[in-house]
Length: 498
Image 1 (cartoon, rainbow, N blue to C red):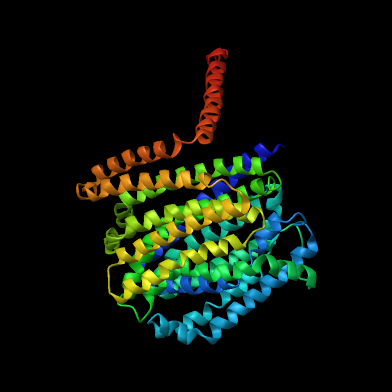
Image 2 (tube, rainbow, N blue to C red):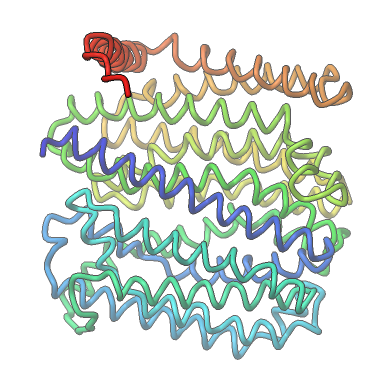
């Protein structure tokens, strides 16, 4: 099977699986949020913040090295990766058990210290997961990865209602997370081609750490980027409450769902494509431009939808108790749009085994933390928290574009062009929202959202030749296929009457 067919087949499976998986995760969160109070949902959000910190500071991207490396199929290399992953899981579990009380106190929820100790099961279970589902992605085989994700998410949804109604507070979120992680790890072993084993090899371990040490620093930076706003809101030293954290987390979880879906698909699908062209700069630039244009168009449309209709979506799914998102969801949407676009230079860096560029980019992104601290100190609204994140993403994307241009000769317009188009679309959507489409009923909101989405798509497609040609050529092939099918149907003999 040719590369294009493999990409299309693998991309279709991965996209569909990721979409279904994220929808299931969203359904789980909706169920939990509807059952719990905003304050209890805020405590549940502190579990995610803590787990994300532990995962981020020990991240060396072993799975990405296994896909990117030319010897990624080497069983010895995989065994060393399993050893490191296990050590990482044990480290996280010990940290949670020992420091559960101060962590709970930091978030103003000392009564939940016992829950943070039980949370230690999650990094331990993750440390026992099998990496074979990542290795087979080198062959564009995404089926194990999709199945593992869907089964674990489906189980979490199935148990969300009974556990939520039974416990009725943040304990429900704790046990759902633990059970989901257990199912996930179990199925990585069920679907593996190789037997799980560990090995110590100093050369491989040194190579893994050489690839991953910038990512360990980057992991901490990513925590600040991804969770810094919620950490500031949830801290007992801030003027905000756990209920504020719950409302903010609902909006952020909803908006990040499509971003996480796209990031997962693009990372798994595009990394092998770009890695295969790492020795041909012209081909690499051509592939990158098209990928960035597609990413920018999708990001723009998603951002526009949440700016114009985000409040309606939140209150419809989660309930009126979360209507406060109207104050800041537009800025969160704009921030996530830029973060989707920033995925592309990061993937390009991984294709060249350059993990430092992501570290430098995220270091620039942490500028927003200073703004967050000032905003919280002044007791300003959550809208200022969200707008600080947008400013940080804009700075980080500019730095990423500059690094890839000067270090790897990646044409800067390949990233800047789609970014400018997306920002223009966001500005139009913001104007729709500002001039009152949100205050005149559901029908007007839907109409404004559709119109703004069409404008965003046009702005993100028409200026870029590669994307236009892709849509025209592939769209023409699809239409030709449909016409031939209709013609064949007309020429078919009539069915005999009964």
